[in-house]
Length: 274
Figure 1 (cartoon, rainbow, N blue to C red):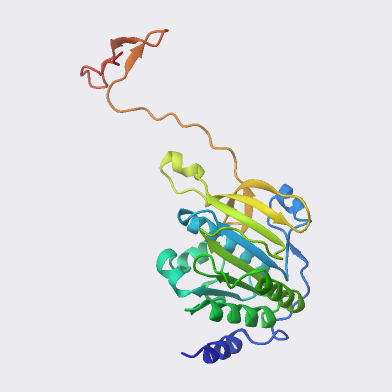
Figure 2: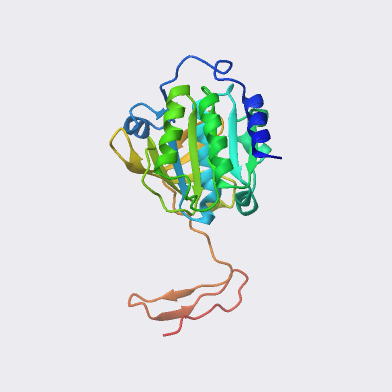
């Protein structure tokens, strides 16, 4: 489909800024008091924000963080447009409907738009910024995205501020560059509380605030509370003592090998050498 047709379809689906207008929401609280204080009361709506996955293995955590921000910015009634450069979907996949529901996002509110070239992605992002009043557009390029430079970011930021749309620029395994973004985050995956017990725990990530137009920065270990649809401060992981199968060797005070201890079924245990 020609790019002009894609833009026309995007405009028809997201409608005009007037049709999506709502009461102005200056900031969206994320749910963690210290983090919201640093942000000046929450994440600024109608602004450009950058999210960097520290490495390819952090793509899931960075995507989850972007979805969490989108959920907080739109609450539960405004659209989310996900603009993705198609090579990125091959590496990191699509947003998954059951996962969206678990995040508290109705999959029917998310519009996925795929493009091939950076020029198309930038044009679709500009159209979303101009027309998606009150909604959120997640812009996911592939790789370093050289064309999404300071000048392009400035255009996106100005369009978002004029319409009230929020833009989340999501980059995976790319180096942060200078921009006019209101905030810039570097996201890394973090082990969940359930992992130590071989259970499924809440999604947990390390969120490092690299840039904040409000001034202060910092790092938080956060997890997503799917019941309340907010971020929560992750409690410290408790050390888990997992018994090893079989026998262990007793050690003397000086660390040298002691007598072997029988295993649980009475078999001879291993001795520590040296």
